[in-house]
Image (tube, rainbow, N blue to C red; front, top):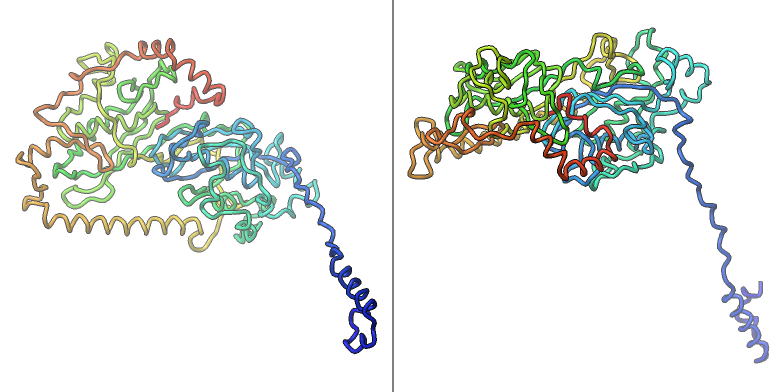
Length: 531
């Protein structure tokens, strides 16, 4: 090539020849380089949910209430995310539900609505999800036949396929459109999830071995504060809310208070026993006029105060186990506030009967009709937990894998989920030990020989103790025995009929109509026991 000629080659060239050669080389260098052809843009395929089978299932899950602004999804911006919002978007991320249909499109129902700060260990929802086997119109057995007769297209699909290129939800809740990603979860985390469990399964359920691993998929997308515990196939007409036969709440508290006073557990038990049965609880709940509730009768199946960890003298931690078919808004926290007053000796246990005597003769033995609620502060939300939701025998078949029911599984050792929750529990015990030693360190300087806190003001310790009434969860309300006004002599709220009418005639009604246009079931959510 001419460009590779040596310097000796130019000996004898004339001036004009050299200029021509330089001009030729300049033209070669100025020639634009040819770029390789641009790759064709990848066309992202729209996922077609209607091309896949669905089945109706129930999910049992737990969550730490202090991390969330309640269970129910909120269309307006919220300071904290809601449990439903985070769970919904995880289901969307995994392509188990269609975001375009929203909650109604997947038939979403929940057992009980918990308020901000309230936790749950056995919450249940039911909904239609994408399935490798299910059939939207057939029974579970029919769906298995459909799956077997439609070749191996479903069975060859891996669990990871559920999350690849998942689209985010079109519902926006606060600043958390796709919760979970901020915790480091992504589609790639699902690629190593095995499709089939290594557990041995009975022959009767071998047909379901190719179902999606719902627990593994969702728990890898959800934050550690929400854990799916089990799932169950359900009938088409099953409803997590309306099929529920009872709800079991727990409220944890300590007999010993920061003021040195000790709650009278026996008095509290006597008061709690009056709750059992069907009663009108309008004075033991929060009246929400936007719900326009006029029937406040609810049936309590049992109300027991049981020890958790106590010493020989009965001091330590206790729990109120309250089981009922349904509950009113903040009913458990209102009940607990009254029980604290009884335990402190401020009220007689019979005050519970009086508060339920809303009309003449409704409560045998009550001497006074209390048709309007006295003013008092409800107990703190932190110690409250929805422990369990009950359903008719045989209605549910809880499973932790893609096939085997809990009664059939034969797993050696603890599951990964159990280990995760055990680790959280172990870490919380460390915090408890640290806080206990902080308290021990402070006791050297701020605790008297009689075990009571040293007074920080000229008033006596006994007077300081009387000023503090427990509200649970380490919170207190300042009052005083000499200033204490018995519940039945306090100022009363307006009658529920007047409260409902005033709301209907005010701005609240118009505002609620706009809200109902977005959330059609919002007006009836709190009728079933929702704390």
